[in-house]
Length: 283
Ligand SMILES: [Zn+2]
Image (cartoon, rainbow, N blue to C red):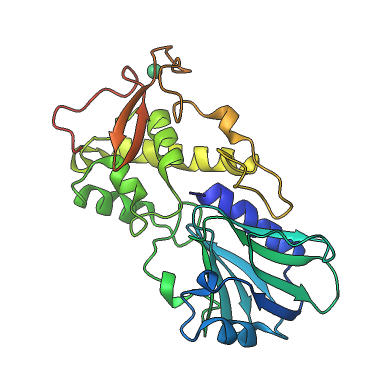
């Protein structure tokens, strides 16, 4: 699942290649891609045809292009890609929505092998689309309040990794960057949030910002070929991962083999020495 750095990389590409242009035609090639559109593909297409796209914005793992007061909202799901390219290139069988522009320049193709991603038009959603208003700001947004985050984190009374993945507390962090941030902050993933002191919360937040920022600087992490920017290129933060996906390999700080624990049908990776198990963990 793409996390903040991968989605922000796509947002920047849209800002560069798509913002300021006017859509000439929209073609929904697979209705599942617009399943959240109340009246279906025809409504989606007619709401966007002829519209100018003004800004590219993001909250957490969602991004949207504003068109006047309205928003074209996108979630990439597991395998969604927004690809910009020459309009004459062959149409891959995984293209779900195809946008062409009045200037006859590069087109935009929403491509999604596993069809968990989706797009929809949200009326009056330019500032913040209603379907994502419950999602908390991410740690880079001006609206993010570190004091409020610390209070709400402790009040969750859950394991700290579970809290980091909760998009109503803080958005943009998934399995990969949660493990990496916890390693950087030397906190075990099952640490009960109510036992974190102020210093530990500050350390954690700094680690989250560091790891997301470092990943963004290199275009994100690519575990398979699916996480790509609008030009189809992969990021390379996977080379900088300390613990995620590295079971049995040495911790970059102390050399102790990285441990993998089952966690919410997935995994949690940690260093047994740098991130000691809490006495009463919330697993
Ligand atoms: Zn270590």
